[in-house]
Image 1 (tube, rainbow, N blue to C red):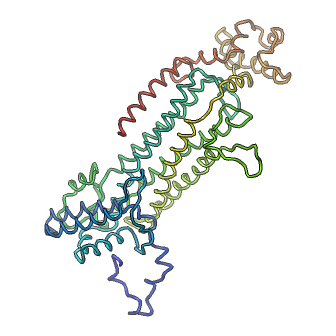
Image 2: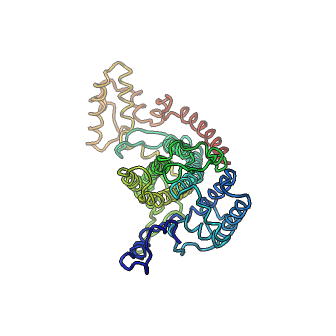
Image 3: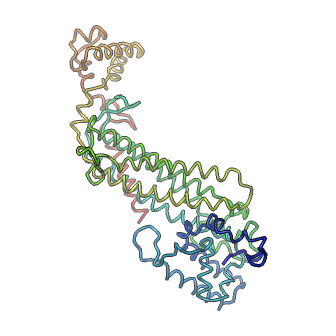
Length: 482
């Protein structure tokens, strides 16, 4: 069955024009293997469309009832009991030879109710139909992404709360920089994911627009109540331009970008945890559940869960570039190129959701080693900036203070010493004003942390305040998803 066959010659009628039946092209052009996951959306949209045609008196009441019953029978036959958030079906429909999901539904409907099924397509096109279904998919999947992100947010906050007061080295350029609270470090990833949460909401809002009724590109000629259709299908508004409505995939590109950026954040977190769980650091230890071993080296404990998240991020990032390249040269309005948007969309959404779920479980089961973090703060001269700040507060120009402390650090590095190993005489060779207070500043990471008592800083009071705010925010977000 084709939804468009009348214009074309058939094999056997014209032996010189049989490309329509080239099996290679048939396989190359079909999309049902990908878009079959839109079956339930297609059925839902068609139900609303049939009722709208009835209200417009395009279909008789009896026809509306038969079409609606047929569509419902198909839904009941394919929809599986809930097994989680993924679309599943009772029957294996993946072997169908249908061109796309819309063809499959019409084929099934004709088997259910006979020739009346051919009226289903009245006044609409596959162009506005698929645009509507893709938007419904986006709207339904974004809450699942946010739910998975919420699990990671809660895991981060739980670790931050349980290890408040733990000190660790902060890094720039992956070199020791300044001491920070471990909770402050975790809250940095909380902030990233909170922005991801907001971006997904922005994507959902922009996708919340009904294309149905735009037809192929010019709108429908039937007197349909599009605003009512929008309400029935759960859309906030109606698309205002039929040409744009059928060809717009901005909402797909936006969601791909939001997923890609979230995956970049997860990849950065994965990289940190991989580094900090290695024996050279030993700040964390991954649970055995989320680690693997080596087939040849018995001692290995590999962070494969994190490496896979890091690797899968690359694929999602690539899909953003692919989608933009797909869109950049398309003339208005619909073009078959847009068939390729769904494979990228489905894969990116599922990968991001699964990665968030896994990252949350890894973080929740991390074993933290505070003593290793604290010991590391004695290396790398993390309090050097505080020494310079203290001198500046005593009236030494900061540039001069920076120079003095830099020379002291160079001396220590050359002689294998830390600030704790310095004698007063050694220190005064470079910092003439060296005294017991400067010695305390140099050897107390905790004091360095307490000095950063500004909004957004790593001081305990500031971190505790932000942690409380974050916990209230997450509780509010959790209520939104109920």
